[in-house]
Length: 302
Image (cartoon, rainbow, N blue to C red; front, side):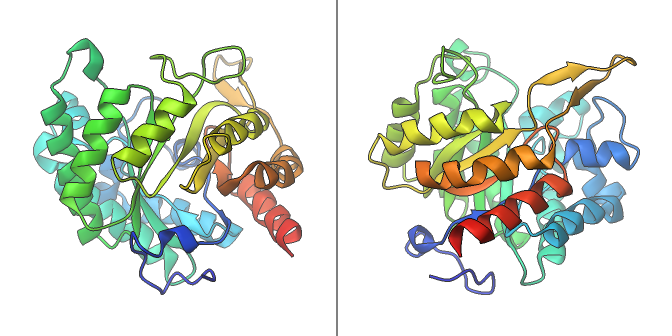
């Protein structure tokens, strides 16, 4: 299957996708447009859609073949903290519509579902509540024009299970899961102790269309993470989105990521050899980083 965003993705044809470049961080790009630290920027989907579109367009123009949606915090459990739980569907649907507008046949749109902000395994929230929330977001993402869904930045296996079940029941789209591996000697565990084999088996058994990792570490660390997923004899395409190096504190007290675009370009070949199918950036990455990834992928796959 060739890269053609005009072809509808299904659970059946998803495994045939070629290696693709994904987008980078959204939060840092929104900060450049005026977002303040800790601001709930998901509401921009309704209040400042042009700013959200600016970010989405920048990633498509940089060569991203997959862009996400500005819906990472748009689930009703997180939004309840801001008295916005009843706007979850509208905010999510609008986010998908904005990314769809930017994609315009040049990229796929993968709807983002982030963590609920509570720990399921500790009983802070019931699995059923997470499932219902994910189902609502998945329906909104599909209605808004998303091609697929990624449940990302996860660390709690029980939340992964509930969110995946909810997203699959709430839409007909292919759904994948991406966990954050930031513990252990080789970053082989999530902060809640989930191993890469556990993550893979859960994704496969619950019907995910892809599996992988994002955030938690610099992009170079993701070579070994991709290799560990491949060692699971993965039938699922592997997704990797690493940070722009380790976070540092600048003179003004701000958290910054300093890895240049070349860092991503230099590791693309190794990531592809390790089995990664989808490669992009997470915290601190920008359209420049994505452009470097896209160029390096073209060269490696030529």
